[in-house]
Picture: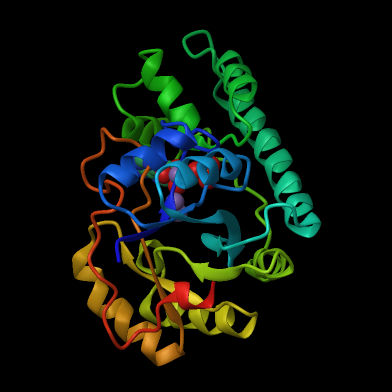
Length: 273
Ligand code: AMP
Ligand code: MN
Ligand code: MN
Ligand code: MN
């Protein structure tokens, strides 16, 4: 079965509306899809409707920004009840914190040459979930930097003038909200964090102790990660997930629905839906 359980839409920092994301996935042959926007479930009604139209199975999802030992960690909630109050309350608080943080970033990099507060106000007007990615794109669109990578290098990244640490909830809270919404907590892209092997093991151990059930084993087209992630899933007793992390059709490295199969020997996380 063609499965993609990690996709973004304009409800967070993706560039396509939820229905357009579903169409692209449908054209790629996806049969089971989860929309997993950052810190919101606002896109799931539109995505579910389009999945029905296209004859696909849909589960509501979310990718929660969390913190573990001062490191930003992404926790996917798959097959969540999008009306769950503890989940919605937690996400609303997180989004308010994100808006505050973006304003602080704006204040720090505002100058004659960089109308950062105006750019931040525009982003807040247009988007329910505001991320540094939005500001980076806006800096590019306003010709302040050439690329988003340059925006992080000059302004937004660690050690730069616009770097403001986000007060993300700890992973235990993220897992709690997901479980309260009857969803399955899955650690997103476990190899993408700046952690030593020992640190990663401690993260996985704590994630499982707190009620985490799975890890992403197939993440986009990083096929070289599949084997080490399979070993980790088996070692820690996690189910395995599969997702593109699609954001933008201009990025050729993670189109929807063109993923390697989950290795046999790892329990598919969708067996728990
Ligand atoms: P936020 O969750 O608001 O802190 O934004 C984090 C997002 O910024 C990440 O998910 C990345 O997509 C993006 N990001 C972080 N560092 C860089 C970088 N050096 N270049 C481009 N994008 C980055
Ligand atoms: Mn993103
Ligand atoms: Mn992520
Ligand atoms: Mn993602």
